[in-house]
Amino acid sequence: MKITVYRNHFNSTGQVWDEIEIAGLYPVEMDVPAVKNESHWHDFSTQIYVLEGVLRITDTDQDRTLTAARGSRVDVPERVLHSEESSGYRIIAAMSVDPSSLTGPVDRDPETL
Image (cartoon, rainbow, N blue to C red; front, top):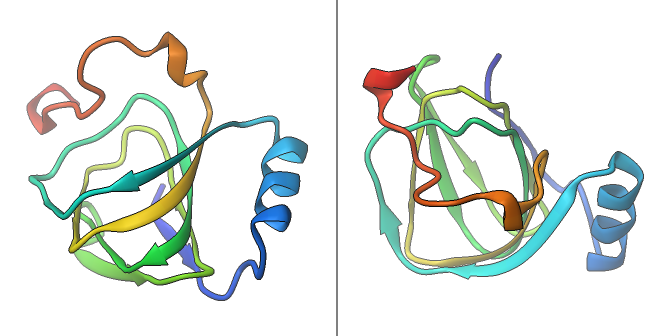
């Protein structure tokens, strides 16, 4: 599995909410502060809809960095090593699990994959 970016994927947040509902995912709208993190993985998949700002996400397994700006959707499968870098961005994250069921840190150490 690999991370995929779909540029110019949506034009409105209404489109995003409709797509998430049809897919049966769990949405969370959030502002993400400036970040530059180490490689990690999650035990759930996420579709990231970029509303504002720019996200640079590195797919560690594929050794490639992808850029997602406003209107992009980023698909991050579960158990894929990646890292993020940004000066801050606003997203709707559509997760395969209910975020209220998550406890503790969601970034998993590469050594445990």
